[in-house]
Image (cartoon, rainbow, N blue to C red; front, side, top):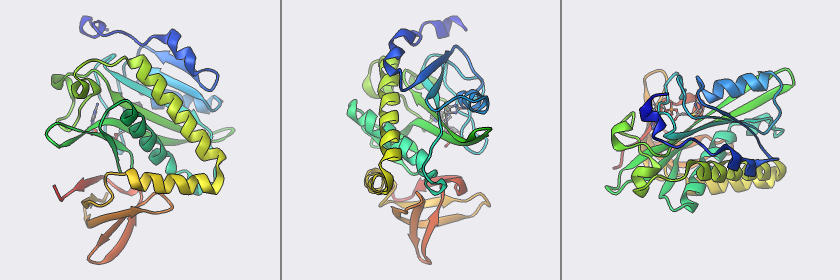
Length: 273
Ligand code: BT5
């Protein structure tokens, strides 16, 4: 690691014991992608609750072959192995549950965070423009003991304005004016995720209804005029009017209502700003 990277403190691994026994933590100085490592561990039999954390990623992944980049020790980069028992039809809610929980946790810590459908977490800037602070990549992995889900989260913590990989990004430090303690933020986020996931899994139909209404109420995309860019290069224009029972965004336009799933969308852009 370069001298520049060393100026930032590493995670305090001893304090992460606070997450046991619900989670088993593996902290790596460097990984290609924590999602790739967690997926391999799941294929090798890792049980639910393995949390792979990296101080740096050399091949951080976004959706659709896009990349995720942050300087060493400037971010929280982690992937959680889950083995959900909910019906397969409810799996698409995992990314939404994750984004919703992360946004709520950041709001609890005083940040003006919101979730953009399906699962980008944005912070409102002083100029009123929202910027991306968290990226979430949920992948399904087939393993010898059944399908697993890998929940990958990248949160920009101490990046300076010069270090942001794209102009649409921001960091907690830029918003707060000081560097937050990464270890404390990781403990808060990981415990909130475990709690929300357990309640959703154990709560049956009622908990899933609750998530659907609480997510739709919190999602900053609902109520906006949007352009949804589709993989074939065409796009859908209309007002985002809700989120259906499958977690799809409902867009109401001149030709009626269309529901789009997260997997079918390249970008969603608000057009009413
Ligand atoms: C995402 O993809 O937002 C999901 C990113 C998930 C990253 C985590 S890190 C831990 C785990 N291990 C992995 O390998 N991945 C997960 P997407 O919606 O496709 O957005 C990717 C786009 O975000 C890029 O094309 C850039 O424009 C932008 N981007 C890249 N790095 C960023 C950053 N640090 N902050 C904000 N935006 C970024």
